[in-house]
Length: 241
View (cartoon, rainbow, N blue to C red):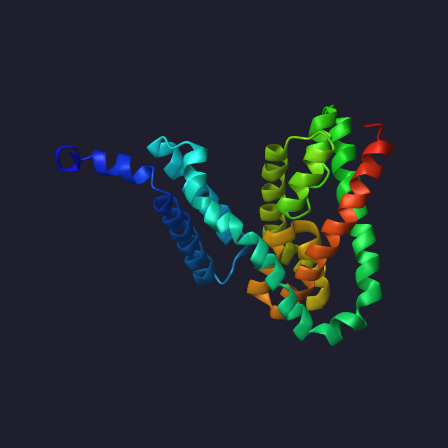
């Protein structure tokens, strides 16, 4: 009986999907409150801190990742609708977007090419095997697309997912101080750079800072996914992989 064993309740709850959904939402909510209190300081990125909080809880409780994901999959499912919802601010700012169409396309080509070639080139110089290069190449693309690209080219989708998340967190943390240091004040450029280099996490950060920046980050996220899907096989072939 649960009443006879103080740990029995935890054993029961730990296998309930609702528990891990609640833990995920609570961890992000707490991390986001800290981010707001710090005026969205780059080091207070809510995704970064939610990840380590959840990781610590799983480690301390001895919970396996598949058990955790039974609850977290509900949040995972919402990634698709959330991405589609980016079309709303895009539509609302369509006139501004059309005026910047040519510069955006130029930035897309250059940014995507540099992101893939630099990652694959450095990894190859360090002696990384082919499957790792395939997993690394689409690191700047949103997770669902990146995992598909990596797996199709012989990479481990789990490794791709980790690399994508790390890229997004680091990108979201450095984009604001980097843009400030370069004295780039155009919210369109700042947002597009965030979405291009740091996919969904960078886009979320951009929306926290400025709605127009978030709109352009969402555009970059979508366009980069399409362009990188075609670019990665060509780059890997160029490197003999």
